[in-house]
Every structure is written in structure tokens, then in C-alpha cells.
Image 1 (cartoon, rainbow, N blue to C red):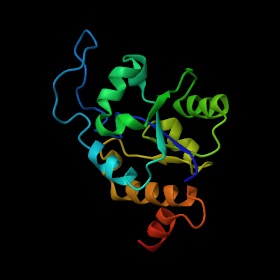
Image 2 (image 1 turned 180 degrees about the horizontal axis):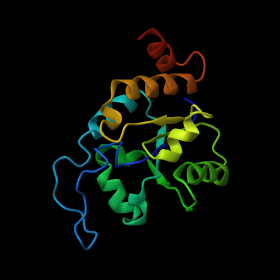
Image 3 (image 1 turned 180 degrees about the vertical axis):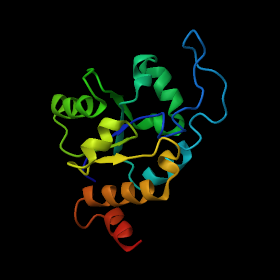
Length: 164
């Protein structure tokens, strides 16, 4: 497979955007609904073991790499860092990171309003509803399709997805 980077937001993608996550001291609280849709993303990425994750979520401002890897659970082995810079919008931050790292193949899963706007011009941005995130069938189909398109012609997983 062509190396692919998935820029990943947490709030509104792996759990509802308004799910309580932090206490008044910005420490993670115990909330079983946090990351409740992570297994959905795990399943979607399972046929694509070479996909790497770059955290674009604002959580990157609060937690170091080790904590982010832990929060990603089984997806943690795919962790390839965080979006390093901060820009006027999430979409700009992602696009700047794409340039900084010279990434040829990438996708972004996000519910941020700037990503919604950017998705009108760039299909690599896959928009999630903040209330349904990656649990949405439409988002799952969009991600599957995008992952299949990134595959090199003739690769087994590309054929498998083309048939499903």
C-alpha cells in the first residue's frame, strides 16, 4: 500500500464533540463514552495496516505523545505524531503539516467547521457530524472509498474493497 497518513480529530470523531472529558485542572476524567467509536475506526483501518495516524485534535495541546498513544488504544501502534504547528483553522493546520512533512497521500477525519469548508474543495477532508462521528454510515463509506482510492492498483485490499 502507498503510505497514507490519517489526520485524526478526537472530539466529534471518536466520541460526541460535547462529551465531558476533562476536569477543571484539565485532567482526563473517567467517562466510558469517551472514545466509544474508536473500535469502528479500528475495524475500518484493519485491512490497511500501513495507514499511520497523525493527531490533529486539540487534545495534542494537552497531552504528550505517550498519553495520546494510550488514548488511541489499539490504534496507538499507528501513531506517527501530532500536527506540530498552530494556525488560524484546523484545515490550515493540517495542510501546513502535509507540506512540512511532504506527505503525498493523506486523509483527514474531522468535524471542525474549517474542515467542513475545506472538504468542498478537497475530498481528502472527510467531514464528521460532531454527534455521530465515525459511527455514521456515511462517514464509514466515505473513508472506505477514500482508502480504496489510495491503494495502488492491483493490491489485494484494493480489489477487496472494490468488490464490496
